[in-house]
Length: 106
Image (cartoon, rainbow, N blue to C red):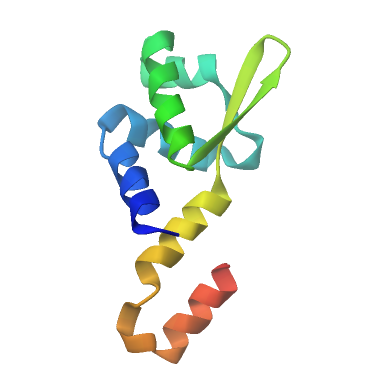
């Protein structure tokens, strides 16, 4: 992961509604949630939430899939994993236990 990609992800998560939406999608797991359900859960206007979800998607943290008339969003766990690996890459002077844990998470 490049530093610009990482800063885009952190910028996307630095807003309260986006962070709440992302955490909700992480809890939902691979099945994800329809946009309307996310909006209701967060008490957000659908149009506002759509903007937030789009930003999270462009940052590589969320993916979407159209199912008939609904759009289902889910956390992009590959993108999240890449961000975590980026953060931990130089951690702890390459301590073997830390490196093994990161390799297991990959």
